[in-house]
Length: 202
Image 1 (cartoon, helix red, strand yellow):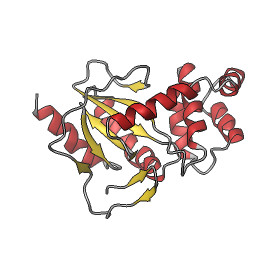
Image 2: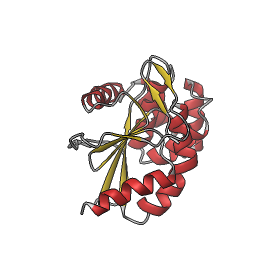
Image 3: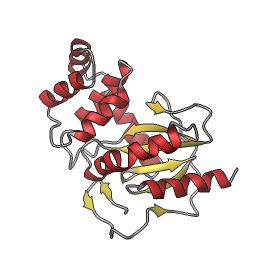
Image 4: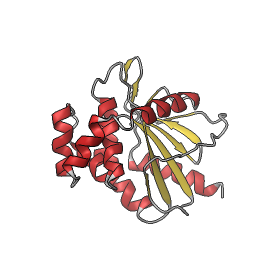
């Protein structure tokens, strides 16, 4: 299944349509900067994910596909995943604050724990909820509060959105497999196909 949240609203692909791949696109050389990364630095495949914590389809990927993908490919050392926050603020009023909260969690070394809690609770992303989720993810509440009050990562997130747009990202989730763009929520089978394609290129 391939579905996508876009900046101007919602766009739903036919459920039997595969993820969108531009075979003629030039591979992007993506600068990871300080993005949260899960996996071995020496992994053969680097996957960059542009995602939005309020996007329904990003949530479906995170809950339904990501655990299997993590076990099969990331934990096994074949792939690593970099997360780029791309809040679609026009249609998702809580997405930017959730992205800031996730980077506050990353500051405490618990981005992925907080990532999982946010996507498990997408219907509760108001400011009070973000703090509750921080405690659930094992964060120091006072450090989290200070980070959120200062909006410490707001500028970082804004730059990431601008950078994503420069790479042709218009909606979420959007993946780059070693710089090759694939648009839409991926099933474990979709992900396996893309990983295998990268491994086959050597």
